[in-house]
Image (cartoon, rainbow, N blue to C red; front, side, top):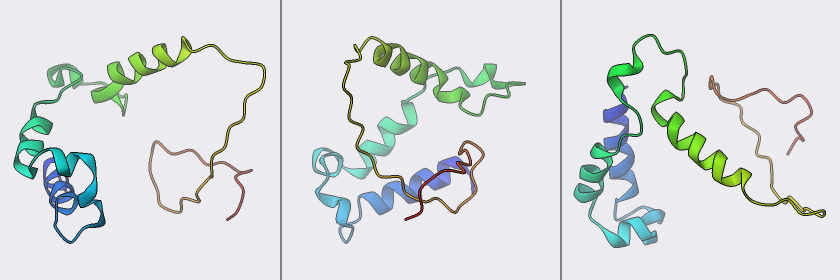
Length: 105
């Protein structure tokens, strides 16, 4: 399924009246058509330079680099508490990494 087709299906599900996500801020702020119009215009890298690039995250690489740069500016304190639940993932994705020591749920 192409990326554009998947985005259309995804936005239709998100803005569906029967969906639990209807109460989210995006759905309350704008219509589905407006969201699709804005989403079609968002670009982080030039697609013409994509030829021969092996970076799977090329389209959002500049955005990721910007976020990492800003996160690195946050000072780290002596005591850090990271509270996050690791959710098992059984599907296949080329970006995901296998974690042998990942706790079982």
